[in-house]
Length: 308
Image (cartoon, rainbow, N blue to C red; front, side, top):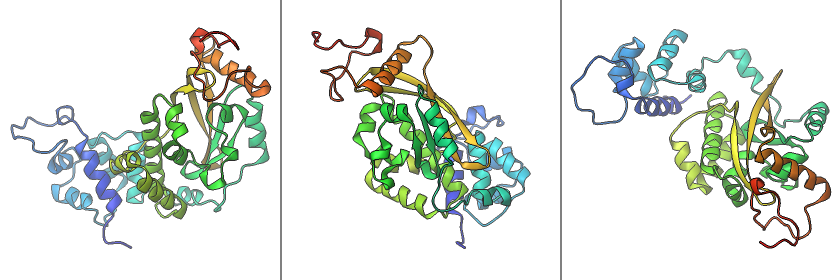
């Protein structure tokens, strides 16, 4: 075992630097601040521990604080739910039974019923992601909206890898930076849960080497748990649209998450999605193609042969 917990030390330092002192409820202090965020003694004061004790924690010393102290540190550092869970993971306070459930077989396989479920969601894009954002399954609409992941070599069927290393993903998302940062923060959260997973470590090493954006955001050590949100796209066939997503973690399989994407009824985005659904069955009208940019769903689809 290493003498210091470097991941913990890095997370505490960066979390402390991100706290706004004016909103932390500290007593008045006229001293000039030379660094962003809170001082170590201020975190210790807010958490109800000694400055020396907190300093040793931030140095990554192998100390196991009580759950109450970890909870107090989470409040002092203004961490959200994902941040507090990450802090517990870094301290090794996750329940043994939960950790055991996070060590499934090396190869994840979906039950046939899950494939049938996402295929039944025929009008809505649906993805199933596994550990380290591996894409385990995608229905017809997800392949049409994002990419045909099933045609990629198996090692490339990974959402974070696609997001950072495939130029088509950068072109597809008009909010690419937001989506990519979220992917990084989700991976950070997963690493805290199981820091010894070899495949995850290799993926992160590859992304840090090949993507300056990934490397920069990885260094910030922010964590995020994706439960819902939205994505803005500029699809090469149907133009601009926004999809909302909800996630469902499957009972008995915490490493598998179902993502379902929808659009508001009656919206231009919904009309674009319906148009794409029809084209996946019949093919786009003659004269259209993935290289051609349409006017967008609010203007209606371009008619074959119509002037541009």
